[in-house]
Image (cartoon, rainbow, N blue to C red; front, side):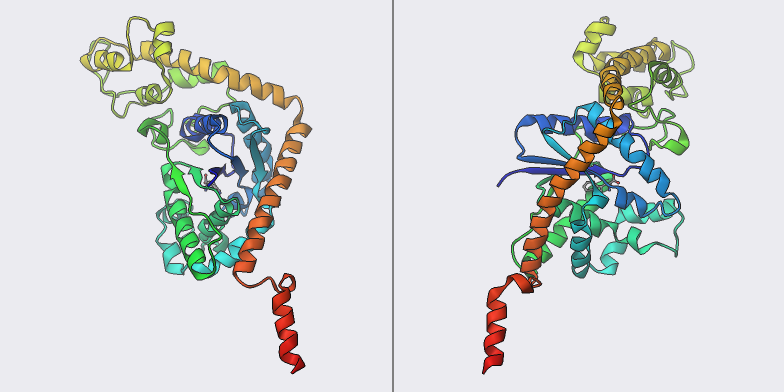
Length: 361
Ligand code: TRP
């Protein structure tokens, strides 16, 4: 069976370096690997609206930001289909039918949705659309018969929910849908890149993100102000690398050649960590090293972004074309789903003929 990728992001802000190491970098590798017959990348605006009822303009404005971030990271519209969720009406139809296969109590157990409900203080006034978004996400994935869904850990409950829906559907109706596998980031640091303040989650409201579109000064300023080890007061003090955001970023971003280029006194990250732990290595030196790496990593991304920014109508056109292409695929799946569910009356001449025969007697 052909392997197919589908993944996506909610367009609620510009993408940051956490998105990059957690997913974007890998998507580009997968896209270029030749191992996948198709790659679909979804801007999940309809899902973003489920908890942004009060702010549709935010979602609208961020479609282009996310698209530019994708393109600047190297997602290539010739190889990957970039689509906008709301433009694929078939996804709503699939969602509606999948709702028959999921219980309320099953949705209530979803740990990611539970955490989000708490975070947003929905308490008893949970929008139904928000509560059921795991079902809509199952439609996103299955519409494209995705085998592989590159996501962060927090999305595992959605993949599990999707797999259950697929099994239930195929068992109840016919073998139409494909059970997907999640593909998690390679390392713990990539999976959970902390904010620059050491906070576990990067978020716009905390102001602790380095964005892919930040300029060199912003990047430098954010890195030089990063949270390290509060017990490491003097250079000579022994330091901790665990829970030290600078070292977590190095885990996620540094490569052997960075040491050769910017810090040749150390062969690798283990040696640098050992020195820091022993004492005698100052935060500023480590931060300057991280800054060199981040500048080198983000420079080509920013340059490519500037190129795409010169022709914004063309970027919208890429999204439009991608959405049209995606829609054809989703329509094909929907048609298979509907015939499996026996709701294809007008295409079923056997049905029409047998009913005619019944009434001709
Ligand atoms: N829930 C994902 C997020 O919050 C976005 C998303 C929507 C998605 N549909 C998807 C991810 C399908 C993977 C597959 O980031």
